[in-house]
Amino acid sequence: MRKFMVVLDDSRECLNAMRFAAMRAAHTGGGVSILSVIPPDEFNHWIGVGEVMREEARERIHAHFEVFAKWMRDKQHVDPELVIREGQPVDQIIAQVNEDPEIGVLVLGAGTDKKGPGPLVTQLSRSAGSLPIPITIVPGDLSKEKLEAIT
Image (cartoon, rainbow, N blue to C red; front, side, top):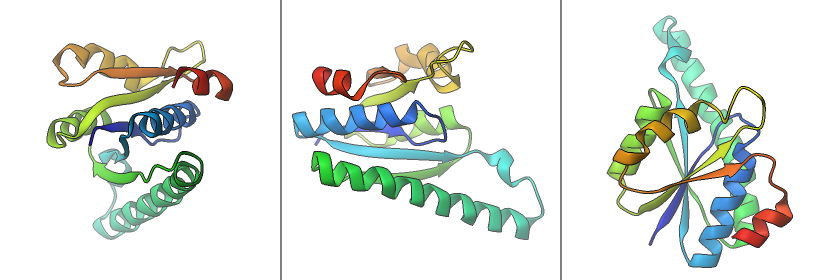
């Protein structure tokens, strides 16, 4: 089964990327893989404190995932999988794409502010030529109606 991989983070544009991935998966008989990356710099503390912080980050990720997963299951009839990795986000995204042969498309949300589309879109666009799959960039301010029309 071909999967659409989408990155779960704290950005606003993540919502449209999730919607797009779920709707495309529903319309094409695919699946959704939701990747969340915990950056290593969050745990540069004493070992015990770092472990507590790591566990809290995982709990936060699971809570966010469940919100998206419920919508995907209820509205799109897609049961997403969650993958949590630790490291530099771009490195971990590329590693996950290379390790899971079922991933067919990477879906990213583009920011809408004047700073640009966001660090993931900017960095992964530079690597697009060496990725084994296409990247779909979803505008962060696209309406639900437009997303439905194009998926």
